[in-house]
Length: 101
Image (cartoon, rainbow, N blue to C red):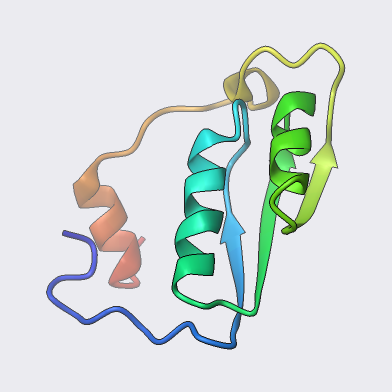
């Protein structure tokens, strides 16, 4: 849907940066890291403004570089660290990828 039929780029030997708005369980970020390693990325960097302690532990066990601004002790949900945290539609994502958003 988002790639609009375009082929996947070659990732072998490249440093890939995965950016997330926040990491709660780490499961999605872990899936991204594993997938990128499968595609032979030379280095995977995961960047997020906020991350739970359990997610940090999970991701560090995968030998990826983790960059975050906060790892609060009282982490409950990503949304608690934003003034506005609405979901966006597929159409909004596609528009942003086209450069219109």
